[in-house]
Image (cartoon, rainbow, N blue to C red; front, side):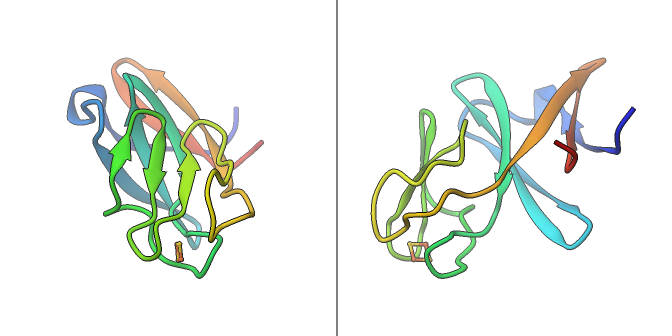
Amino acid sequence: MGDWKEVCTEDELAPGDFRTVWLDDIEVAVINSNGKIHAIENICTHDGGELTGGSIEGCEIECPRHGARFDIRTGEALTPPAYEPVRTYRVKIEAAHVYVSAED
Ligand code: FES
């Protein structure tokens, strides 16, 4: 079923932490937001900056370049200068390992 890529173990991803992983040619940020793990494309929809490296607070991540904020759970752009959402990816936990998939 599907094309899952292993990211890390659950233990390696504490709340507020992230890992990045490549799915084909797209870098995906896998983030522990309030104890739940989500995955979003690691590219800001404002001007292509990497989102990781910005602050993670609860379910929001702030782009370190110009400060746009995104909802980590849905990818929704919450504040300008970004208006378009970032793509989200499926996450599963199996035997304490975290996996992501590009498939919908
Ligand atoms: S590149 Fe992210 S806010 Fe501008």
